[in-house]
Structure formats: C-alpha cells, structure tokens
Length: 339
Image 1 (tube, rainbow, N blue to C red):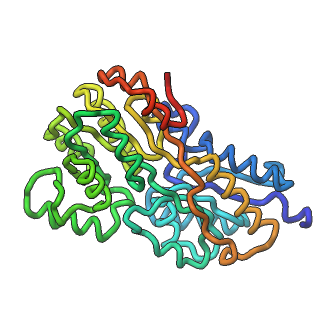
Image 2 (cartoon, one colour):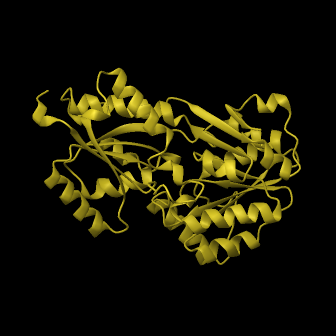
Image 3 (cartoon, rainbow, N blue to C red):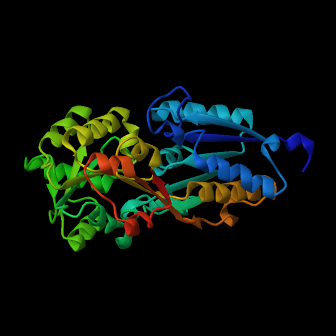
C-alpha cells in the first residue's frame, strides 16, 4: 500500500449519530457505540489502526436531495467506503448511491429490505432482532412479568422500517376507522412473527403505527395499562420525542418497557433490552473494511456476515420500581444486570 493511499477516507453515515452534549438516553448509539470499540480492536489485530483512517461521523441528511449532495461531496473528497449503521439509513443510501462501497449493519424484520443483498456495491452484517427472533428470549417477558396479558408495539411510520408493503397494509386498516391499535389476528398486522410469538406466549398483541407524536400519545391513552407491556424498537429513536413519550408513559402508568437493540434506553427506564453484540459486530465491520481498502477486494467478494451474537441487559432498579421481583434463574439469562 503506497503512502498516497493513506489515510483511508471513510465516513460513518447514519440516522443514529448524535453529538456528545445530546442528553437523550440513546445518544451513545453514535460515536460512543460499542461497535466502534470492536472496529478499532479488529483493525489493530489486522496490523492497521486509526492512524490509517480518516474516519468521520455524519448524521444522515433528512431529505433525498441533501443526501445526494452529501454523496457528491464525498466523491470529490475521495471517500472510499461508507459505514452505515442501521437499515433505515442504508435503504435510503442505496437508492441514490451506485459507486461508493457500503458496509452496513442492520436488521430486516419480516425479511423486508432484502433487496440490499442484491445491490452490487453493498455488503455488511445482517443483524437479528434478539427479542422477536427468539422464542426463548420472547418467553422471558412472562418470566419477568408473570401476570402479563398483552403487549403493545408502536411503529414509527417515518422510519424506513415502515416498508411500503407494511405501510400500505396500515393504510387499509386506518381506512376502517377501527382505532389506533391493530389487534392480532387482524390481516393488517405488519409484523406477524411478533404476533405469532405473542400467541404462543398466551398474550394479546397490539400494533400501533403512528406518523406524529400526537398520534402516538393519543394511542398510548387508549392502552389497557394493567397487565400490559410496551415493546420499543429503534424506529422510535428516529423521533426523539417519541422515545420520551414512551418513557414517560411507562413511568406514569407503571407499564414495563422492553426494548430491542438499545440498552441505553432501558438503563434509564425500563425492564430489559435485547441487543445484538455490537462490539462483535464492529469487529466484523473492521475486517470487512480492510478487505476492501487494504486488500483491494471488490464488494462483491466480501460476503455478508451473520449476526455474531446477542447481549441482553436487565434493569433491576426499573423492575423493583414496577414491583417485579426477578428470580435468580431469570437474572442469569442476562449478560448484564444493572444492580
């Protein structure tokens, strides 16, 4: 590798990039996230290091036009790889980028967004959703909340996780004017795998698509709070005020809150988080980037990787606040227990 090709110009572009002064509980998802730790450890073991990288973080622009302008600037600067945390962001980037190599990590609920696997310039790590892709994990809900009767899953329509087919199905439901929550076994449920898990667990399942904070708050007001639980996904994080609304509702109505892939939120308020092992994800991303940058492999020869593992976090203070006593055998199922 000649000196003129160093440092490698790499940009991290994502909806999940925040400034250090941001006080939101999910702000550590950006530059401080564990995937960055794994990334650095991987490139170090492979005889490289941050000294070889011009690594900059950029929150993805809100509009398609601004994103096109950003990518044009990156081409002028000679950016050689985009690292994209989050399916929401990579779906948007794939629509307007055909040349800059992309290494992403993100989940594909119900296998939506799988067209990315056929994109010639994209590779990455396909994440699991540990709570809803594991019957064993999902059944932990009732181990923690024994009298659980129903679960509520709000979904942000402003996220790319509201895929076109799912969004159209929601529109058909709303046209019937049957209320905010779509209740299984309705054919308008967007995430049937979660509904099936709820059925196996013996609890009711309710899905609530919302476009505005006001819609979400109105929907929460119609919940049956007693013997219920909320499930949060990171599509909610794309509307910061929605996260605050869920946290406030959970505290005020004493409804246990579970999250997927965001332990920072649960550590502030909630019961448990079910995440991928993001440090291990970062190690895979580091290795894949060096394969392209240093070893000269085309993206098509750097295969997609499977999720390398999970990390479950239990918030014992949050459980105690809600009056739940978590048995030691249940606590042992978690990788991290907040005392």
